[in-house]
Image (cartoon, rainbow, N blue to C red):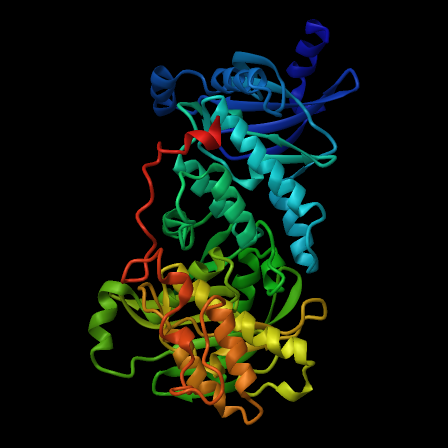
Length: 529
């Protein structure tokens, strides 16, 4: 590659190149030179704070260039660094840049898995890809390297082969347990339990696989605190006629169980739709599904993201006098429901998709509030026609419901109101009927074993078609390794799964938490050498 020709191309980068990503602290450009594709990562010098950071840490572009060379020497598949440039001028902004050879055609691994999940299909080559991830991470460990941003988006898939991206996050000092937890959190949406077991046995510090990933709570909490009520890529702020709150803009990768998750919503959409909705509510023109001293549940529709969406509007009221006091510290019910719903979505637990919440304040105190969810199509679990379902789909419906309750508890939550009327059975032509939670107000961030399934077992009997096999399928979904009573045994009315779940006997503490993990540096030598 001629240096003079490349220099001329880089001088005209804004004209000949394409801006792929802009995150403020870094821009990524794609350009072509002499028939080959390249990427340029530009780190602008944004001010005194950035210069102070560079004084101690050095240039991020040079750091990425050096660390990609570490990967190359360790024979770890990664993009090849071509050049690093200090004081690079891009559109009048001075910064540092690193040029990488493009790996094309290719796709980020999280996008690859998401495409097939959205179709309701298993990704081709799932087992082979999982094995390559383990091999690549093992290579990192053997080379004495770690990666502080180890997630599926930093793996590139080309013709069935994986490459590791983002050399800036590579560190010397070896692979730590925190790096593995980061990868496990990223893969949790697509990986099976068998994938996690193989990964833990190949790379972990030894012992049994922990019941839950503690990093998930940390990352989800950080995301919600920083973004769920602010102005950013995923959420936006809205103010209209004394009401103010937040709305959903877009999700990086939509979910199959929610049509609204694939929308691209703008502020203009809600500036048009919210006043209309509020006016229709005040005039009584919308269908009231439920009304009580605790609040109203109203059905309506909005046009956002270029599509008409059926919605459910919840407008809570304070039923008891003490609600006026205890909401001062923790916020109104709509705000709490907004955060609870996103806590479940971030853990890939199917629930009604939250679109917007707003509140009206008087002298700083919330006097009125409401939240809008996407309306989930289908009947409730208490009213679904079970006899119309094929036997296999009926069994899978209850197993899936049990698994959701198990996952809620595994993540450190409890559902205090998991009754059958709080589940919608969403039809799915590819996967069969899917249970979706529609009321998250009963979710609490505390560990309370079997609370949700006990509540559901009591309430689901309202459906006259409900049978003993349904109860067994529900319990097997919740506790697949537990022992169950046979018909005719003493105390057969309560399955053993609700008394002593076998999967929690040896590796759990009395409060249901996972055993204390090994020190982050204590990875098993035989697994990394």
